[in-house]
Image (cartoon, rainbow, N blue to C red; front, top):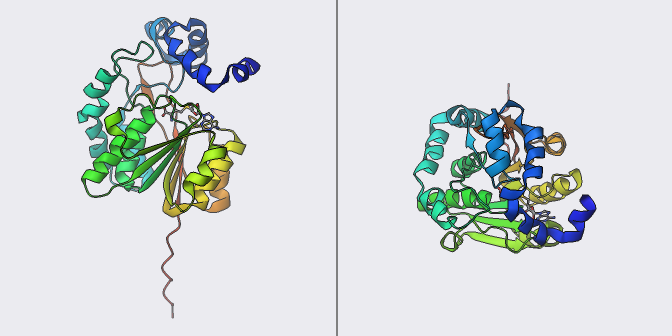
Length: 290
Ligand SMILES: C[S@@+](CC[C@H](N)C(=O)[O-])C[C@H]1O[C@@H](n2cnc3c(N)ncnc32)[C@H](O)[C@@H]1O
């Protein structure tokens, strides 16, 4: 299977995902892997009808609880972060305009939800980063959530930009042209494109969503750390297992966090959000005692 994937290359693999709705065997296997707690109706609907075979979009089970736990993890008031989360429900670009943009896409859900990417939106709203980096774009749901948060920040006087990286030229199709003015897409492996793109730049947040191997994560996280602004947030988007990020925190003095994000009405149960915060601000000298 691995050899076949290598043979057909990333662009054709990407196109094959457009047949997701019809890939019943793949979905059956996914359902067996994830669907232990889902009811039989949910499991059947997933196998027969769902167009998504990876990077699932779903609603969060208990948004208030998940966002409150996120607030506690980053040391901010829950009310503030819940107010950012509420913006998503009212945002036409994440609702009706998105659904309109996708209306002829047989390969996508008619009304996709942000799922765990709601937390990405909330973190960008809370920290007002100047530069956000996302490695791995795929259809662009993550990019869209990050761009909308950056738009809201800019409206409030805190502009920022997003750099996203993927090997597939068509990546990011769900982001409408009108929403791309704060976005730079780089096409090529991150090994080839990330170092030059970050030359002379300070990174405030990095969402790591290319392969989550130790080698690749050390490369991408390591670059962000060497271009770190005063504060840096590194998100491991692997879905709950982040040994490399834990090690980096131990080695470089970061604070590692895990926040539960359970799904509702989906075979994928959801996974903890795993991220780390690095604070490079100079420490105030401690006063002399005596
Ligand atoms: C899990 S998807 C990204 C999902 C996206 N962040 C989202 O929120 O929906 C992974 C993407 O990484 C891309 N990719 C894989 N290896 C890569 C590499 N070495 N450099 C850049 N992109 C890569 C794939 O083409 C794929 O589109």
